[in-house]
Length: 298
Image (cartoon, rainbow, N blue to C red; front, side):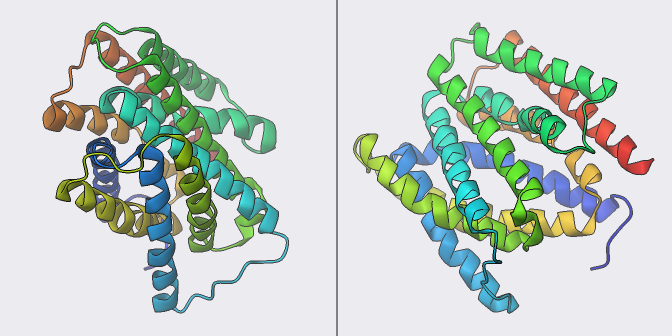
């Protein structure tokens, strides 16, 4: 499929669908944590994704080659990926999907801050600064207020750690030698390195198996095949066709949809403070991405 200069109807539908998948993904993790210890669950997910991505590479005829000079960056992004999902899976075990999602999807905030100091052509503009202020205020509001009585401080802080880890992995993919390799190889590095790290770390977080039921196995398979393998590859395919700024402009939908699904599927309580935090984070993400879009069009 040829590259498009802007998001068309198909692209908009695909990005909305992907945002919905990411939102539903939070619910799946929350439910599956009931049968598998979170860190062990994350490790098995990465291990399964290694096989799926390898099969994808074989099917597409893409050689699994590690470009010279990228190995240190590859191991580093794998460690950061492991940290990100260790934090996220623990967060969804300790706090509500709605709270964790509002904090986790603040990732563009931390990525913009990193880019300001690392990428010379991606400085913080006035519009981006306002967006950062709104989103950070939303994260602080979500963490510091508990009028809805849900979640825990440690769970919220773990979600924040996951957001910062996600931003770190994205920055490594963009600014390290890994920027020279195919996105599928970047993803392979992340799951291949993170799998043994998470599986070893799981030994320090209690019993590996909880009350395992068929629904938990289904959730694990959904994570491996649909989310990490097919979902991430589909996302990378969209990025190869549409402008990155246009793709990023849909990112505000994920926390909104996650809060909605947490309420609809899990019966989570959504108090005024969480709604306020959601509005602030979503508005901040919109401003940050609009700033990027305008800069790209100049």
